[in-house]
Length: 347
Ligand code: ZN
Image 1: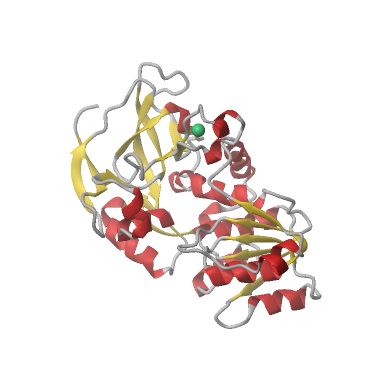
Image 2: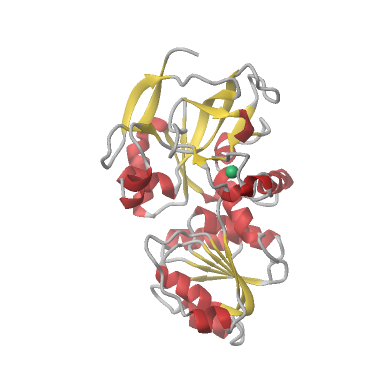
């Protein structure tokens, strides 16, 4: 398709973003062109917007950023076989190579040659995005656009929560941004016996309570480790879901974990984190799982079933919906931390 589109791009290697008219992307034979209906903002987008050390090291400019989205297929390449114009899709944002050791042995979520939408190639903060057919995830047209756009980060919560047993378990979720909030909800619908939500922001704690947390703990007011040990008769929790990436919370998570328990680490620390390996992992016999992305496509099928079952209202985590043109306001709200998920819509 020829023509111009509105897009938010990192025009240069500096903080901020520029909303500009750019060419609609051309598609290759195995690509589809998607008209974006909704795009949500991820912590990664914040790093890119702020142009922090990670972004400076990782990204080239100019680049359209953003990767969580849903939209309508408007054009398909000559070798596309599974999609037709009019289909409604979201996307797995990790474009895997298909031929490395991991891709060929069922571990494509840790592909060695991964390319990420909105980081390594142009992304979704635009009226149109070109994606390989292989990462498109067909979504029911009855699914609300904003809910469809958040399937990708919701998949992170699905992956982390179900990486081990959860039913009848005591669970502590450290960090209640959107992924942590969904993890609370997933634990609740899966029959976790007691759910602790640990988060310094009051608005997020309130949503955690709505999502089914039995105990909400503000670590600025009380010691979460002491409180969890008190309530579990000194045992600690069976499962810790670490979603914050904050070094203090990570250490607290290990202290709150019972011996023989499982901790899923998803939050990404900015720097190295010091841990008491002997006491908190080795002698505890802890199972420590690194959670990266979504299992491709196992997690997506599970996500679809959860959505279709209607057991969990994903929308409760969306606190702000703004038109795409207000992306700078959206980024400021995101930076304040006084929010759940922020979704931008396209007219
Ligand atoms: Zn690969």
